[in-house]
Length: 94
Image (tube, rainbow, N blue to C red; front, side, top):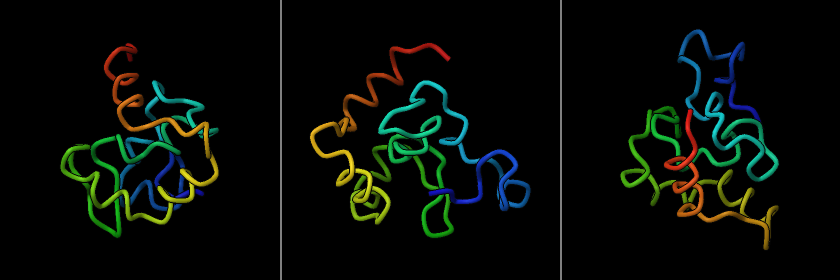
């Protein structure tokens, strides 16, 4: 699922490139490109037209997001929790 804010995407010039689309530390998580399938742990992503803040500020909204629920359902037992993903972000160097 592409939101159009990936590099070269339909909305990247107008709205800026999404931080999840360039976050390499979570590349391939949940079978996605960069952090595209873990966007809920990345600060500054869009949701319903608004820039979201830090994980702590936005997580409640993310858990009701259609895309979040889709990823979680598709991954099943292989789903990596937000805590695991946040630890990866903290320990892996950019």
